[in-house]
Length: 147
Image (cartoon, rainbow, N blue to C red; front, side):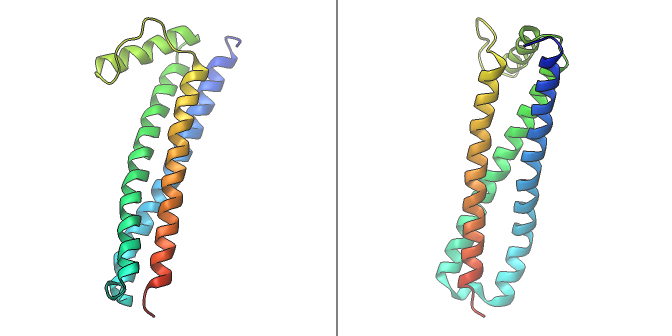
């Protein structure tokens, strides 16, 4: 990777992570803020399936918000990497911060950027799965609520 491509690629990935962390969190927060109002107005506590679906939606909402926070943290780490001139110094800076925070032991050599991106994409996939569970549970609760 050229010296100019590294910071651009890393900064672009960080910007994408911020967007991917924000929109599911915003939808989950909006859904969770209106769910109790709609459920009490429509008598959802009378339908056990609706109550179960709302509980599953609430649990998956917590997972989505937690994973969104992790993705934002990763985005900040990628921005830190982008502020360095080359991949080795950016990776070393991130590894140093993670070691100082006692989140990860200091590795003998910095991981390549592609490995870091792959790990973050796994987090992104988990967030999307949790978001899909939230949406399905939320829609199921709405379907089973008394009219």
